[in-house]
Image (cartoon, rainbow, N blue to C red; front, side):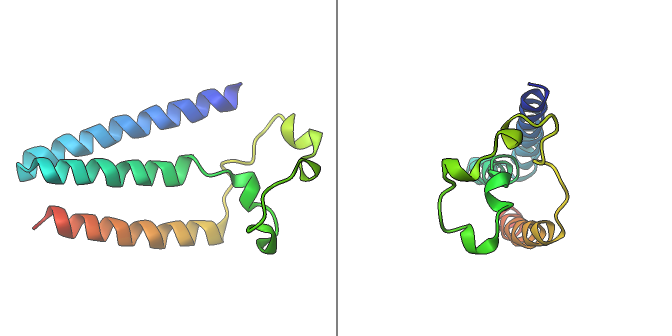
Length: 113
């Protein structure tokens, strides 16, 4: 239950930060269209970080194209006291950094027009 509360807190904090960024963009650019683009880019970013099923991606790379079956779920994975959701993975971090850097660059070039 504590992990669910932490996830909810992270989600709420992210949405509050996004609202702050939207207000700043609106005041700086005076453009409703750019505020809306900021909103959707922010939601995509939040969804990309907080919503993926990390246990799905912790499997072997060759298994990513196949759904997780009940046979692959072990009872100790479901009932474990500490989730692996926020473990550090270097390759995943590098991929996220590259994708979000490109997205932020495109967003910033649009907002600063």
